[in-house]
Length: 252
Image 1: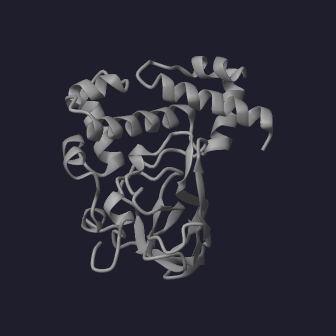
Image 2: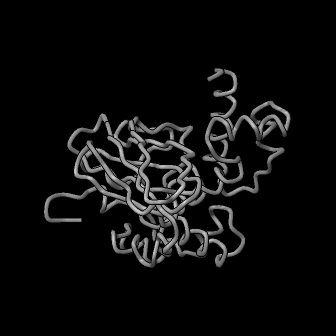
């Protein structure tokens, strides 16, 4: 990756992290990057996998997760502090992305496997399986892998699996379409990713591959996953996976 482009994108992400409560515009971000607005939007999406606006929204929701569990601020106050003028809009977006409402996240901090399987994910249409091997620098730690429509881990996955340690995995009943496979593992005692430093942390590892075209017809596609330490350029993980990433024998 071009060092000039990477440094420019990093400057913008750092600005997002420092000013998540402000109404940052694409023009503001492009000036920080020192690129034209149109060139900036293209390179930001190429480097991070998300548009600048979508990345900023994820940064805001990650900060909201932190404030919910580390302060006693009201949900209304938190929504305003992370840049939302409407608490209703904030609560709706938080619930969609994190998998729990703000109040339930404050109480439980994690979805369960049952939360992710509510409803019919495959919807009865054509589907296929994805399989492969997960490798990770975090040996003997559980790995969550899910199928998502974009390059950010948010919302209910179309299919998911949880394996006790790196190795073979299978994602079943993946609906026909274009998907990304995203996997995460965290070091022992660091399952609560909301407290990880935004500049990156070797205790949090992630893999993203795609888009993978799934044609249905009960076929199989191979997708090997190589986890690496998460960096500033990776979109924040929004889906609340604390308990699943702490999975041990007799507990899920």
